[in-house]
Image (cartoon, one colour):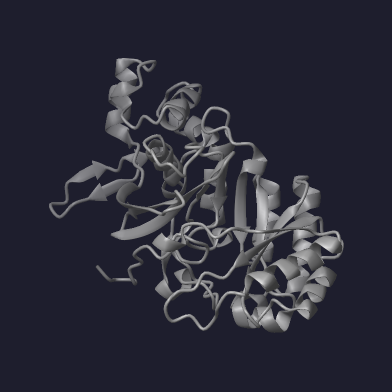
Length: 369
């Protein structure tokens, strides 16, 4: 793992440098053991990279010079880089960042009165192909590495420190949601590694309720996540029955609603979180009637959850439009009266295409440059 070699066109052998950016504490311990250094160095380097935002070994002053020189020869700390920033009238910030392979992904910072939520991506594009999502129209290139996932948090913390906007009362990241480009549970190992770093006291120290992984419904992934990560779960449901969901989320044909709800119940039991969040995009005439609300209440029976109703965010070429405000709030009342905690999510960043389902980035097709 640590002795990988790269051969250039002249056949001269160079050792490949290891990127420490995407390693959690135990991985760093293994790395230092393999280079014949004390395992406790893992915590020191983890703190420098993620708590202090330092990527230059020369600046890690509690490491001896000999060790710093050794790290310079063997390793790097590399994260995604900022390409462009867009700022919405409501203070929402969208950042386009570059990752290897000439791809560009997007992440969004959503400021509120008492918190700031960072929405990050897990893949370049998305293979799920949900009918109402603009990201799906971009196609799929590859999974992000753990360094590229946690690197969005690392970079955003620096960017948030420079925000000076009248509509941003809290310029601080208090919550991270993996709800951007991609299906996180199709990149599970890298996502889990990144969440472990987010939760580490020596890194970002986010409470588990402050880190949420969202899925369109990968049942085996939900079960694996419950055992290997200590985070909150959100299910992008969007439909009250399989007939509608098969059209909106093709993945439903493999993992129908009943299996998803049972997986969410298992997740609560195994992970001991209090509830699961149900994401439900409201589309006019598709999933927003009284009958749909009653069906949703029935399928959620026995699941401890809270429901977020999200107005559909239109994009050019879409076959759907948002439900009316009146229909959304009527739907909200029906669910609340049935004892399901339900809120209507305010659309944020619509004017810069930073709202839910609007992230596109720059997704290159395989072999394209």
